[in-house]
Image 1 (cartoon, rainbow, N blue to C red):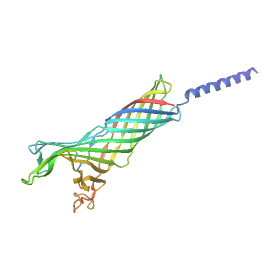
Image 2 (cartoon, helix red, strand yellow):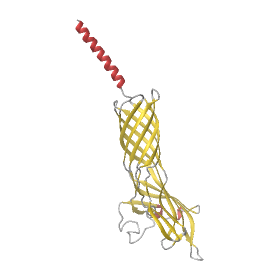
Image 3 (cartoon, one colour):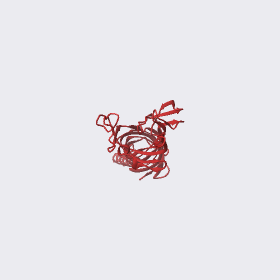
Image 4 (cartoon, rainbow, N blue to C red):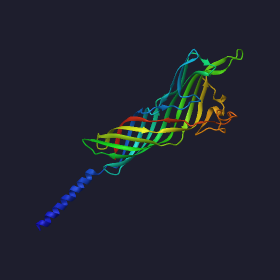
Length: 309
């Protein structure tokens, strides 16, 4: 009898211990994070051709080229804000889906500096083209939690980036010939300003992060996360949305070929491009140009708040 009572007591104690353990180990199910990030670029590549101008920084003195260098960089440097929904399947494993808005820093993509306004032999004039990327993306990821200690809970995650909307905006300012003086035949110069928007093809990127949360209350935590991300944007089309001369709107003076561009993997005799088509450019159709790629690789720090249900 005593033996049976002892076994019964041991069983009850074991069940109570298991219940307490399950309760302690029961993961938080849903959680939400709101954060802001700053990224620095981690890799630089040569920028693509901008409006027929190579990605170069050229300097002329007295009409002579005195220096030339490639313009390189990445649009991976910038700011990001986002909201993330997460679900924990267990104490260690969970998934997240982030929705983010990213704005890159301005990057010079091509530039010519000259003390002579116009060099007829080469058609050279002063100009500067600056690019900026803005984008919304979805970021699904798998998260592994490494265990909580003294309020801190470190974790790692890996996932993909899926851009859903955005563009590369290229702003060009130039002092360029805008006409000819009918009396002298000399070129007339003006301040030319244009804005081109490049729309991308669908793409996927990669992201990996290491972070930790710290409990501030029963449901609220602060978190910090170091994240690496890398993906390449492949241009699909380009459209000139602004074109002014001396501050006056002159977009209506541009042809369809000057306003619209379709990016192609290759050009041939049938392409609407004077480089390969013996008949030149059909001004009533979009221009065909070789595909352009820009990189958005960066290492960033995210700070924010986490709310657990």
